[in-house]
Length: 480
Image 1: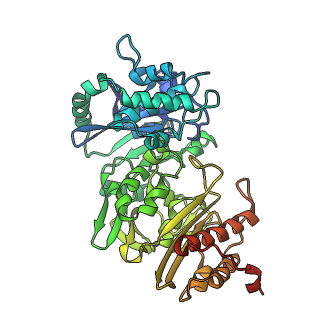
Image 2: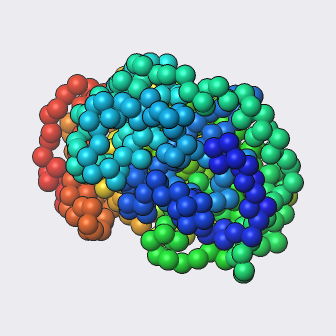
Image 3: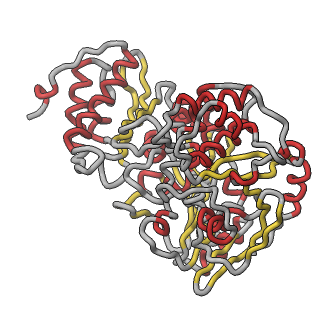
């Protein structure tokens, strides 16, 4: 059984298909057709809804793509859709802003924009164009154009009106607190079921009992099996309620990031400790995806184009894995065995990611190359962690995504740099060595030649960033 608030109404669901998305639940069971299906893959934002969570007695609001959110994620939350924004006989101030600024044309994408604007208004202390762009980057419009929508965002943030959500905030927080408990929950329909553990111990026990189950963290990748490939998942274990998996902390000289921490949470935490890592997380998909997707999920799905693994490889990260009561540490570079293959054993899960601060260079930097700036998947992702003293490379850890079947270190390139002065000749040798490290594939995102050239150019960019020079020595001199 799961319980949540649909705006102000308590909803209890027990016999419900755990493969059901919130989008289809709203449109099919609740008959709320305001939320639209555009892409069913988390790209367009037409299905955006807002989830309210109680945190320390206060309400926090986040946008998510309802097309990728499974119903188990609603447990203990407030679900707000565009139908809920009406203020008596009046429009909500964000809806009125869209009207005043002519931000809607065909109207199909408008509910998603409105919900993103609503959440932006709730989380803002005033107008900030950069924050507005981040909030709206996951919402696409093909008719109106973005200028009037940005004008609506400015009006909504500069002229927020007290609404029913402000007035009821304390009451809603108390009601959500009352839904919280430490008992493992289950929802099921027919032969499909989903377990919702609340503690690490419950998770470890149920995963050992059902090692064939799929772990549902944010679900932004796993849900595509349902929405795009039309494959139902018989047994799910939802991790969202396991608070111990979300802890991010500095433990002595080690940063520990819970595998269940959302990418938004990781971005906020790492901004102080590894700013370059944090900055790149802003390029990860859209805000809706970052609010829901987890660091552990981005590692565990073993995609060759995940954004986090190359950075973590360059930073010498390790994983804390758990199977039953047994814990083991594993270097991240030993985790990826092949395309979508990992070293996880049956019933074993990622508990945390650990980054030793001693390996983090002040020159650490990462870059993502994709067809568009926001809400896109990498063609090539590069992370450079070089320890440089008096212009000599003392240590080098370089990793790439999109260049092989797995996220991978560039060991020949590292060897060409190790112990050498950072000069144009050294750079040329290191660029040539990348061809030894990688033989990338061609696909619809980029050709193999393009990927290899981009990888070399990103290394040159690092050199230019560190030295200020842009001299490029002919690489062919060093190719036998």
